[in-house]
Length: 333
Image: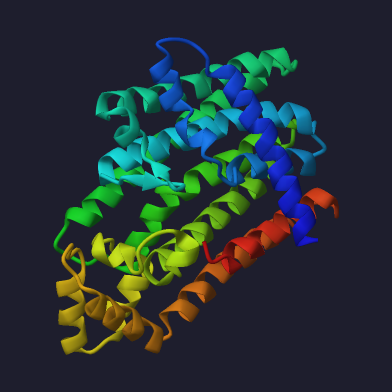
């Protein structure tokens, strides 16, 4: 069944990519090429898939939802472009980041263009597929609200990174909820809204998306520290080298003795960390069972997400959403 879901995800991704490619057209060519850079490099398109499945769960049209889902993917790509600029990253999806490939000014403009076209697409496609004006306005309101929340989360992440203090778990989860889970939550809400679902359904699916988003980021955090570089295509322990104060690192700092804690803190954010020191840090975290603990925490969020689907009738869409929750926790890249 996992194979069937993976094919379903690919089918939605293909349609979303087709819509975005046909939508983002104009000149100068270099600007639009920059905006499509990550779309052309591939990706799971998980947020648009969840929007489509939530709409289907609420008896909505899959084809109608795909058009709105394309707007969500444009917002997601906007965040990727601007995140890479802020983090100074040089590679994403095995291709140069937009600002590296096209220059910083085009990177900024490409991100802006994606965000503007996302809102434009909700209005244009919402009307073209025959949605009531009140539903179109509601979709725009939700998208705008969660773009604000996402921006707040990004600012919180920057403050955590630059602060000399180590955040507690609650502070980190609060940041993740805004920065990462916001688009998952908005995607699920918008899927229900497109289908004309009632407020209870929208609320339950918002909670589903929020919990899925947190679980997704926690596993991303784990992969960023302890992932296999052959799978992740990133250097081992990359988040340690970049000084990211993610949950696995926070747990390790709290669990280890004073001597190991001082050494871990000296390595955090060190660009000159050698292979021996990196392996020390990773093995220390493995010995403390940090990988198991993070997956257990992520699994609790996945459980919460699945629980929020209980009130919906059994269907292929509900099964897909339940399986997505588990696959997110089980993934290694």
